[in-house]
Image 1 (tube, rainbow, N blue to C red):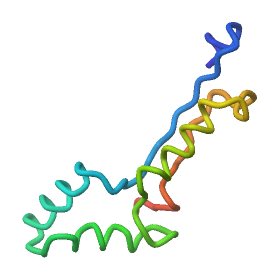
Image 2: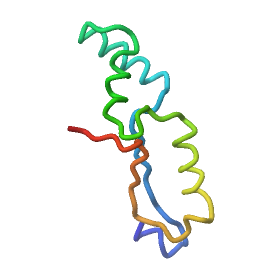
Image 3: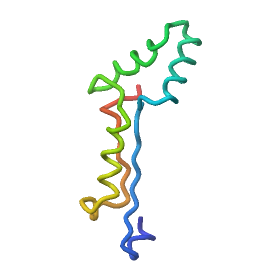
Image 4: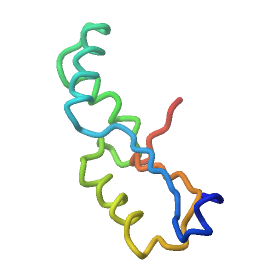
Length: 90
């Protein structure tokens, strides 16, 4: 962020939690096989640890990325933002 600031470029990162995508469907399937539980059960267990009670959807992340790419974030730089619904890794 410091290197690009003189050019008027902001640099930020977004850190999504569990997003309901094909990748996480595969993760759920693999964890289910390892833990001998049915399809969807691993994802359900992970969602229980998220403060908002669900995994995120693509549009949850896309909305924040749009904010970062837009003019309203012009004074935000050098930051990493968690977009995870309040998920805690314990």
